[in-house]
Length: 407
Image (cartoon, rainbow, N blue to C red; front, side):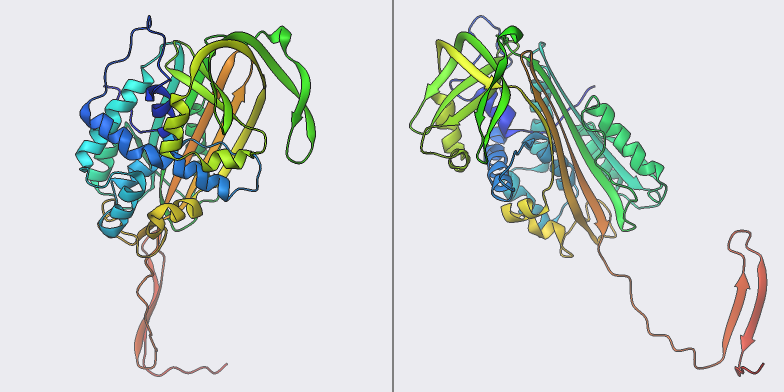
């Protein structure tokens, strides 16, 4: 069975909020179960909170993230968290009060729904767990993520450069070559596990732009005006004019997946719109759209984005997971584990045909416990030996009772 799991405020909300429905002649997907609805409502704020926090901490330039990818990778880690660490992660992701089984089951079913929602849109989700050879991992942790997240599991020699290559090749293949690497060699000696998610999306516009109408035009960027290739179309599209923005909600394929484009009204900056992207603000925006005829001009673009989410996720409430106080005994009974880094990479292309996008998220797990210390003074008779650790041969052995050093 193909179990695909994860959750996404961005994808789910665009598909389900009022004003974002497909045309009535298109057969609707199956209804969400009660648990799936509860899950969507629970995690709805996370993707928006994540986006606002990333923008706040950015340099003012382009930002592109995948809440789906981040929450998937963290969801696998959550299955190994315990105590205050688990409570912090549940609170941030919106799972407080839900059982692990309910979350895992509804996540898998929901993503299975999304990945099969529109045959004209490709949405692929992949998960993997890579751990250091010899590291003791709880079988239950691997089993639950393999069952519900369809995670591939592999043990590697992290000291061998080929380990990073194997993980990066997996990301490359899972994102159709759009993200080629996320693990930088050499791997830290304290690293014992990487939980990696990859998401790939490709959708054609329901009403495509005519490439012959694309022409260079001026785009008013904050630093200076720039000349960009601007696509143009005259069509019936979901449109909204509010006090804060002008927007279109461009459908892909059968119309279940869409790209919402919001342009701030004069006098407002784009960061003002970002600040409005709360669950209430998003729901209000989505409900505003009505299909009318008009002209749309928007730029073609392609770019990639990369960031570390440690500070962002710490600010959102799961800071304990990055400290020595972290409790991931659900991964290994020995404990002493924490998250070293949550690394996130994305890629997107928007042109006359449609949109292609990819994301990868890596959660690095390291050993944080310090080894026991000792204070040994060799100040009394002792035994010493010279031996070969490869063959086991004992080359020399002796007992020192009265050390002397005279040449």
